[in-house]
Length: 64
Image (cartoon, rainbow, N blue to C red):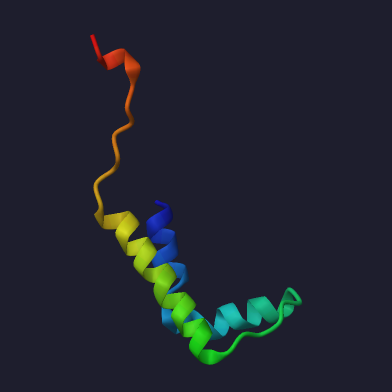
């Protein structure tokens, strides 16, 4: 679920909206290239979270 949120929220097309949100919160603006890189990295992390299988946790109860 978090992966889907990251993909939709950090699409590079949402850049102006995210930049306005950052400026309204008083954060210093970052450069265009750095912001694009950040958006692409978050997009890839979200895609990996969506398409990789869930990791099964190791439980000591299953070992007999």
